[in-house]
View (cartoon, rainbow, N blue to C red):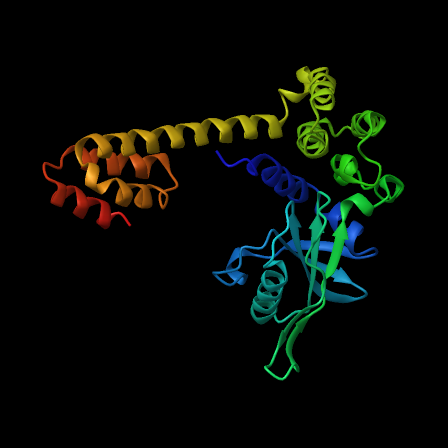
Length: 288
């Protein structure tokens, strides 16, 4: 199972439900207008967040990438997304990378492509936000309720009183639906045995509230679906290993391209009908 999925899903849920909070945090005085439509994005663009905003009287695209670990290609990715989004929207694009957890070395702005003689031919200046350098008051005092779950990631945020304050502030704002998201981000910094046990206990106190939130239900649903998917992949690979062992490598390659349980089941049903390795190989290749 993908271990990055819980926090990855959490950040997507957070910004989807609270776009103005994110916009105000990154571009003070800017106003969220809409999410950039999928059809406006280039097919190869899979940016975390693309928002249309009104900033200083002009329309701008706010492009945000959230990063947990160092990515040596981050600069190039930002430039790629920025350029393609500008081409498709014909609007200026402001790119920001938000690093969630402290790393010793990170990709910094600008990203520059140079000619052999050293002259720059492409350049992207992007904004870099390091959550561990952000004072929690910046979120709290601006009333950015939608970003309160990020408090444990802020400067000095790895304190139990920070988690207590986050829970209290979310409760006062009537945003108990964000408790699960707050727990997901807290787990990124509360990693020692004593701390993680305290964190579990602290949020277990909110269990009656958590279990009825849409986030909790969605995480549980996706977790179950992913478990079924993994089990189906294992069933298929086990069948191939026993019946057509020479095709196991091909089968592994094929199943990784299938995302739905239905697709995997259809492939397995076809393999059940195959009598020879040649027939099974043809069936696997046809599903690539």
